[in-house]
Image 1 (cartoon, rainbow, N blue to C red):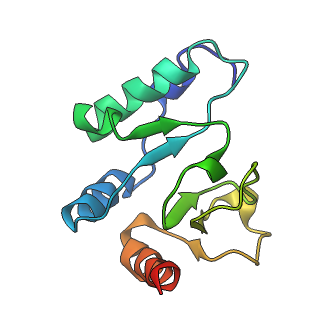
Image 2: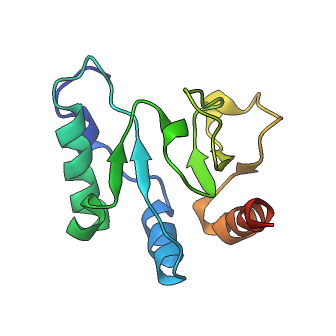
Length: 130
């Protein structure tokens, strides 16, 4: 996690880039919210470079680097972290992106594949906006 250049070299999760473009194409206000790794000296720059390379330069301006994701407003936060903690009551609903290390979590709605985003994200957005 602390290796310089690590985050710039990661490959996108299958279907994620296409899903983001589809969400944006449906006029959803899509932001990238990511937490920096404190011990990695190039983490923040690597993450901005990754976004520019895989999602486009225009998405860099829609990227938020935050230690506390609860401070970011939104309807839905898609994250692979099983439990999001912070200083505030989140405005968003957590949608857990399934990974092998979070399979044990049963209390959070989840999305298995990015191709299924409509069936997971849209109902949560409706619940938040109701």
